[in-house]
Each structure stands twice: as C-alpha cells, then as structure tokens.
Length: 267
Image (cartoon, rainbow, N blue to C red; front, side):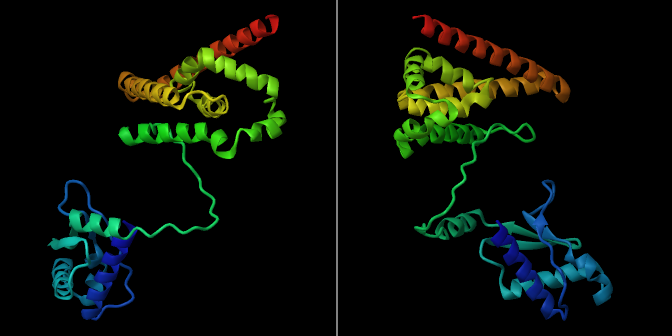
C-alpha cells in the first residue's frame, strides 16, 4: 500500500513539473467512503496562488498531464472531482503486483516476533482475529517440542518447574487438560500462554489442544461481542463486569488448583 501511494505522489509531482511547478509536497490519502475513488490529493488547492488559476482548472490540467504520461501500475483511472484528483485502484493489477513482488526468504539470523492477539474492542471483529489467536496458542504449545523438552529438565527449576512437578502437570493434563485449555481460552485468557506452554511440555495431544482452543476462543469472542451489544456505549459497565468476572474465575481456578495439589500430597 505504501508503494502505491509513493508511486501516485511521484506521478503527480512529475505532472506538476510539466506545469512549471517544482518542490511542492504532494500528499495522497484515502478518499472518504462517500466520495468516488480510492485515493486522492488536494494539491490543486495549494497551487492556486502560485499558478494564479482556480483549483478546479489546475486539477484538470494535472489530470491531463497524468494521462499523457501514463498512470502508475495498479491504477485504473483518475478523475478530477472539482478541485480534487481522485484515483481508482485496479484490484486485479494491484493484487498481481503484490503477490508477484514477494521476495524470496533470505537465510539470515533474524529475530522473529509473533504477535499473539486478542479481539480489539476499538474496531470490528472478524475471522482474522480468531485465526491469529489460535495461531498464537499453537506457537506457545510448540515452544517446548521445538526447543526440546530437555530445556525444562535443565532450567525448569529456575521458575519452579521441577521433575516432580512435571509429573504432576502431566497427570493434571491427563485428567483436566480439556477443561484447563477451554477455561483459559475464554474468560481467564491471561493464563492461556502459560497453559499452552505447559500443555506442550506435558505432551497433551495436539489435536485435542487445537479442538478445545478453537472452541474456547469461539466462546470467548462470542461472549465479548454479546457483551458489546448488551452494554452499548457504556464502556465502564463492561469493564467493571469483565473485571469482576475475571477475578471470580481466577479465584475459582486458584482454589481448584490448590485443592488438587493438596489432594495429591495426601495421596
């Protein structure tokens, strides 16, 4: 997208040079939804005093110069809408340019950051959010198998993951793994990363992990959407509700874990 905007800015700048105008900053931006075109520029306004002509006339002259030189690849046509220049993107050409321009991967030592997202309440939710959350859960699950489970045997004691506790984790996941994954994918989501890593370390079945992860994320996302529809614009009410609910669920989870640990010690 940035390349296309830069190409449009360069094309408009080149057209301005044919009109005898140089060193003018050209800004191309998205056109409002109720206006024709995809991108546009109001540069004709800033040239009215310089060229001593109405902005509408200047926009038409710039358009003629652009059409004479040829529009950038990926642009179907340009229109002079009053004093504005609006551009229409050719979706097919743009997609071909993006797909064909993907560089081959380079085998170099790079630091990779995986964004483990959640639903953003400031914009519309869509299937991409759910996909990214599940991918993040799968990456967290695969950390231990990828780097070797021996890393926990060597360094697990740094954070309390001893061999004895490793056995307990495996037993807990055999008995309660499905519920642990489901609950931490819904309302106690801030524990999901820890549970995902422990699930991978405890050899919890990947197929079951993904199935409960998808189900839990669907429930959690639907709950957030339902809460949004329910409270409307009263964000404080929604925040208070989530805070109280999360606190309750976390307390129950801690009590359940403490009970399991106590019962295990007695046995």
